[in-house]
Image (tube, rainbow, N blue to C red; front, side, top):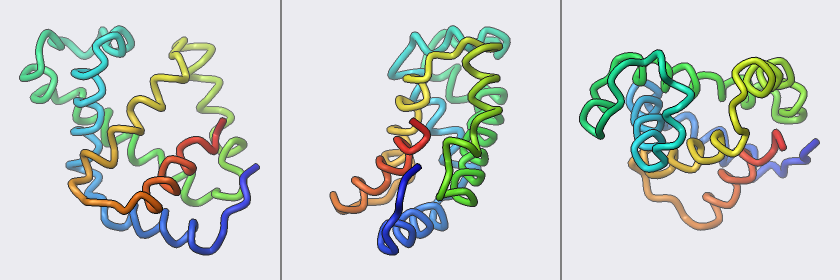
Length: 135
């Protein structure tokens, strides 16, 4: 369990209040699939992922990117126990879908670049601490 300061809570809420989920979600997943091509193996049912243009224009990638980013709302609403809030989702991804947990870190590290905002180092530290909270 993570203990957040008032500054950290406010910073995280502020960052997410400024993110356009319909743009950043698809961009972040596309970036992940392009920059880290081994992550594509989990998306075999998404069709054409053969190159950057195909990935960026793939409607299934865009839709899932929105779902993943929207899923972060659960963490925002349960900041005092993020790990427990994601327990069922963690089991699904690790046991049924067999997704390597490091792939989530890869995608989440794409968010600051995709949000098209400049962040101070102190803000990025809080941002990454938020993503590391589930463990």
